[in-house]
Image (tube, rainbow, N blue to C red):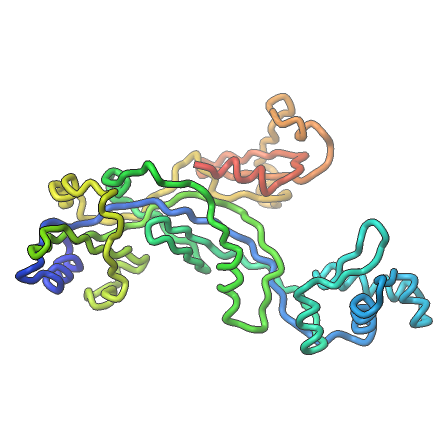
Length: 336
């Protein structure tokens, strides 16, 4: 065991709590790259204010031409205002009758401060779904995958009830930006989803009073190399639940000492290093466009859509055109 586990062992061991075994294992989490559309607020100008008030107060909601008649101004000016409000996710135009509908979030901030949403540059965040702790972690930087040989926590667990169902992390994303009351999340899109490994430290004790085993664990943080003392992680130590699903006997006899080094997993050469939508200039002369006869999706034989360029770690660059749903298509390259 390393110094962290030794210090923790000394802290928790007692005459009634006998240390039995301990060490590190790795386990899988899902890390999803999410592009988030965010907006701040600004005060509505006089034309925006009139358009929004008309859409909110009049029933049925007026059309563009009707608002122009009420103001006695050129309809083109009203259309420009409405286009600006719709592009910034403040307003929606009914496709059936061209009436206007104010978005719920805009209704709230407009009623409170006569303000509207003002779009900012989209941001990438990283959503980590941790099935062990049943928590969702959101970070501004991606986590690195940990390599600990072949010893995985799953090897000691009953996986019969494990589910690969995706969590709905929309509310978590909104909470992540909720600390700043001036920032609002207006939408998000998954860019990449993959499984990575995290490290878990285990300390197995036997309670001599009740003759049952107790497993304490902590998830090794990304800055583990900077940790100097166990007190830095003591608040993160928890008792492992559902021990009836754990193969205790295998853990008790497991040799944790055959891999003391914790390393960062290197990417495979045939895994995508990054994915582009469109045509990056620096790759323009390197792209090998995949011939139509190798495209199995019928939609790929219908003109129109986006170009998706995939750059691999081995230097190969492949291009796919006529992609109708690029965000769905990109997932196929990144699935395990």
